[in-house]
Image (cartoon, rainbow, N blue to C red):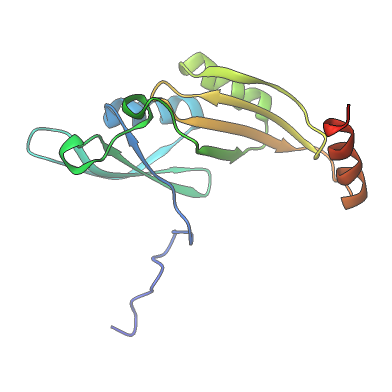
Length: 154
């Protein structure tokens, strides 16, 4: 037991675990849109995904099908989600375009943001919100405070 790591190799302290209607289709979308690699998949006898793990960049993402009897519902069934999955990438423009081509819907245009990122938001075909960013410049705390003040004044 001494060799067992409390946080398994390759996992982060916080790992998103999302619910999707048709998780298999969602995995395919994430592969096409964000270059995801499938790590694991366990299916129920009727073919629903009980647990799957993909990796996007250096981060794992767990995915499961809806199981209404267990109160396990995705954003489409819940009519939205307050959660946004944030994705830092080398080239936000390329990833944003690829995600839209794969079927994501733009909810906030990609632009240079005051906090130093090239940033935009998408909704995937399963109702999950994604922000896509590339850090393009460093901003001092004073510059940040000034930009926020300007944004909320008048």
